[in-house]
Structures are given as C-alpha cells and as structure tokens.
Image (cartoon, rainbow, N blue to C red; front, side):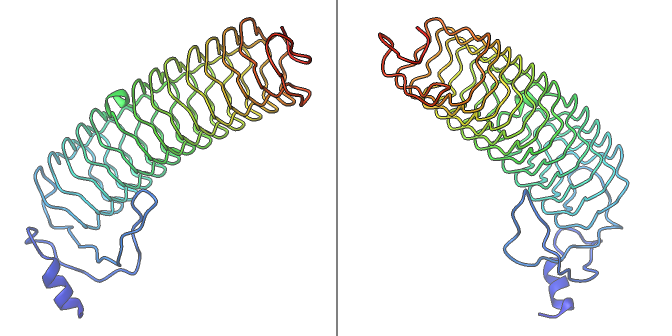
Length: 318
C-alpha cells in the first residue's frame, strides 16, 4: 500500500490531521507491541481540546500543560516526553498510548482508560487517578509520590510497577494480582486489604508498610524489605520470602503455611499464633522472635531438620 493510500485510510474524524510518513517503530503499550506497524499521524494543527479524536497522533515532546482534553480519544498516541502537567484528561481514552517520560504531575486522570499504556519513567506526582483503569499498564520507574486516589483505581492487575516510587501510597483494597513490582519503593504505603496474589515484589521496599488483611499467596517476596511491616493475620501461604528482611515485623496469626522463609531475617519478629505448617525456615535468623502458639507442624527448622509434631518437636521450639 502506498503512503497516499495509507494516509487516506487514516484520515477519519481528524480533518486537519494528515499522515506525514509511515513509521517503522512499533510503539510499546504496557510492555506489549501492536500486532502490526502502525503509522502515526501529524496532528500538529488539530485543536487540543475536549472531545477530540487524537488517536495515533504523534504528540511526542508536545507542550500540553494545562490542556483541557476531557473525554478525548488519545488511544495509541505517542505522548512520550510530553508536558501534560495539570492537564485535564478526565474520562479520556489513553489505552495503548506511549507516555514514557511524560510529565503528568497534577494531571486530572479521573476515570481515564490507561489499559496497556506505557508510562515508564512518567512523572505522576499529585496526579488524580480516581477510577483510572491501569490494567496491564507499564509504570516501571514512574514517580507516583503523593498521587491522589490510587486506592480508588480499583484495578492495577498485571500492571508493571517495577522500580516505581510509591512511598506512602494509598493502595487500600486495590487489585494488584500478578502485578510486577520488582524493586518498587513502597515504604510506608497503605496496602490494607489489597490483593497481592501472585505479585512480583522481589527486592521491593515495604518497610513500615501497612499490610493488614492483604492476600498474598504465591507472591514472590524474595529479598524484599518488610522490616517493621504490619502483617497481622495476613495470608502469605505458599509465598517466597527467602532472604527477605522481616525484622520487627508483626506476623502474629499470619498464614505462612508452605512459605519459603529460608535465609530470612526474622529477628524480633512477632510470630505468635502464626501458621508455619510445612514452611521452610532453613538458615532463617529467629533471634528474639516470638513463636508462642505458632503452628510448626512439618516445618523445616533453621538447622534443616523437620519438625515432626508439636507434641514432641526434637529441634523446634515448644
């Protein structure tokens, strides 16, 4: 197909937009690529106002600070490096858009569709994300410090938040199932009742995080920093916590059955009433840990031997 024919097929609702040239670059959307090479449109003359169709427009590096783009279609657009600080993007469609390195500080993204969007390295400080849909979005390295209403996004399932700045983020009851949060900074974050089942939290900083009532079975928490974290009564069954830092953490009444705690730092941790059924505690540091009423049936103790039963454990604490 020639460029002219391709351009004719792409000029839809954007009368002022024309195809400048086809591009060989496949724009990434949340870590996945479109099925085919798509030409971006030169929309430099198109009004950047609410309700506009800016789908597949090349707006990379554009200054759209404070722009009013409510209910606009920006799906699959290239907004990499764009300045969208303070922009009003309420209810806009940004699915599959490339927002890598974009400045979205203070932006209104209430109800925005960001499914599969590429937000790597984006600045989302003070942005309002109430009811925004971030499923499968790539937020690796993004700055979400003091982002508003993250707890009302509801769904970050399978999003990529690796190395993201989520210090003191409010993520109560958010669905983070299968989310990639490798080396994310969640220090002091509120994750009360969040769904972390199958999440990748390797090397994440969760110190002083509030984690009560979370579900995190089969989560990968290897080498994570959970020092001082509140994990009272949480479900961590089957989780990999090997070499993690759980010093001074509250794990009372937690379900740690079948979890891997080998090499973990559990100094001064509160494990009273916790279930450690079939847990692996090989080489774990339990100095100062409180284990009264903990269930150690069939657990592997720090010396690598099995706790046969609570009634007469030869190597496990009574």
